[in-house]
Image (cartoon, rainbow, N blue to C red; front, side, top):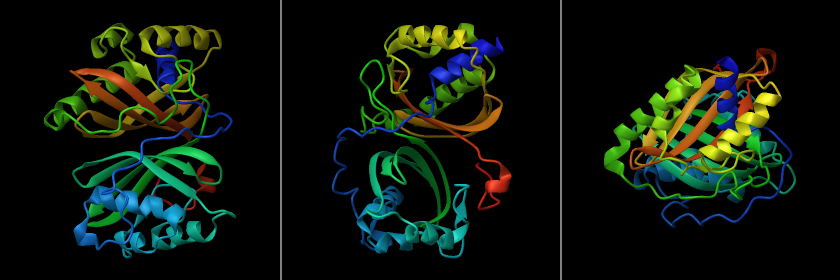
Length: 293
């Protein structure tokens, strides 16, 4: 049962591989691409989009959306506080960074962003920011190299970006949490069909084709390789309408890993999935003491 659970988890998470170029994505709405507006004029989501895209534009204003007295950093390769953010900007390579937010949403004091980066190489990332009194006070993220489209032709970021069904947010978060806990953590594989609408399932994992049939084919191949992977702890579930993000921790090949899985829910079933998984570095390499989660 452990191997079966591990294999399914792998099918729902992206494996690190060589980079490739990123396809075109829908251009964000003008309201999202705001660089130097006063903080009080923007939503928290707009502030996050402006901050991330300032990595590319060099706009100075969005840095003011970070609380200078409290900025807790969970990217273990970046020092704590606003000084750590500044050090990253000062260390940017020739040609600078690139950042394009593909989808984003708010959940209470949290903002989630799904972004295409050129950040020391082409990458896909999930960023989560926590706000207090209109300023960013905490940040989590997970990054992976850009990979080729999967067997069904889907990239790591394409697909719907519009938030809908906002009145179903709580129900959709509960559904995804139950799926993650029941199937990926507890390994009750006989219940997997409860969470999907037959074979109608769009997969953005670069290794897996669409549908539960594609998932099954991948499971067989991975089982033959003896892949062992575990999902142990759900740290947070954030959502807005049809989009729900799970932040979880476990292991892959005996090494600690962080898993960020974004699901799109439609009519009470999981309809689409994007993900990033990344190894958690040993503590000796951390540049802050806040931990990954």
